[in-house]
Image 1 (spheres, rainbow, N blue to C red):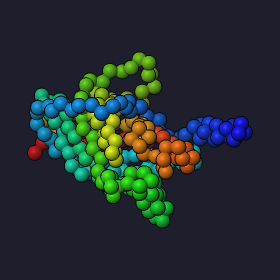
Image 2 (tube, rainbow, N blue to C red):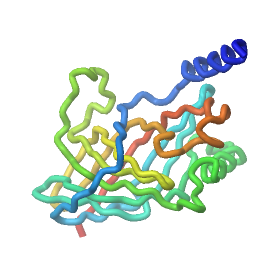
Image 3 (cartoon, rainbow, N blue to C red):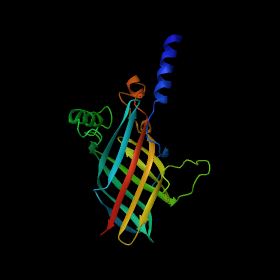
Image 4 (tube, rainbow, N blue to C red):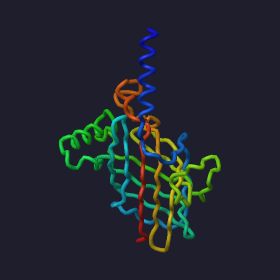
Length: 222
């Protein structure tokens, strides 16, 4: 038994050491929070905006995108105050295996299956802004990756049947006709119950819990 435990521990240590997830700022997660409606003008989200993702395992990374289905950003006094957008989970695409169509299709199908996002049951995910505040650099975090941050955005992210609050640094720009937000941060997929064949399955251990998210959201005042 001691030998078995040693082998298991060695595997876990080895997998952790080989985690090659992208370096990015941490998305700080917490419990779902109440969203208070804000005033202002609704800027319609451009559905050509994308959510980029990167998943990792010891041997390589995979990158891909999700499209947006709809959404709006709320603007008041030339400042972003709120908003919500819907992610089309069935739009999931891999972008790093463009010349390997067979494996590209297999990966996309697997990620859409009940093993991961189960898009037939949960076709959308949502992000609803809780607050937008001026970004304040944390002196204890001198290795800030997203150096263009102007604000900290906090919102409720709903994936599958789980909703958690998450906050992250972002670059926000607003003018009379457009609003935009971009960010680059990492999340722990298991916080939203995204596990391969269950949270304690050894096959899930070799996939990094860390998923990188890059947001590039634009909206236009109609």
